[in-house]
Length: 174
Image: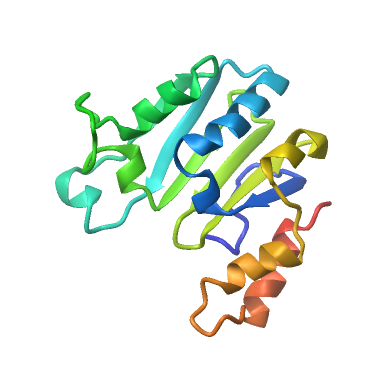
């Protein structure tokens, strides 16, 4: 769990974004950009954790969906809100409503995104340096803005030194 390294793959380049700025269909622009650049024809959206008071009370599985990268933003949004039984609008069973931790993965394994709503952060791991792809989508490298974003999740507004050091150790560009 963050601030530990969240990826099993050894990505060398990391970019950060506020979770709430991306959650829902807003992430589709980034996903489509990455899929097109790396020639990925599918994208996996996988729920890794949910708030215990919602989804897990009703089911013992998490939602994972493989989507074609050719979907529109609207089609992707529809999938996020649809319950596993196909009902829309979804709540209890939909990915949009039940996610605490989510990952987006590619078949090429050249990139992955991990996001956690409680930490208010999304982390994009890349195997190569492709910063020019991400500038328009407000992704940031590890800098003061990213650390300030993390300070907001602490009651006193101060990120503990051990957490800050772990973030720097695990996510500085190599």
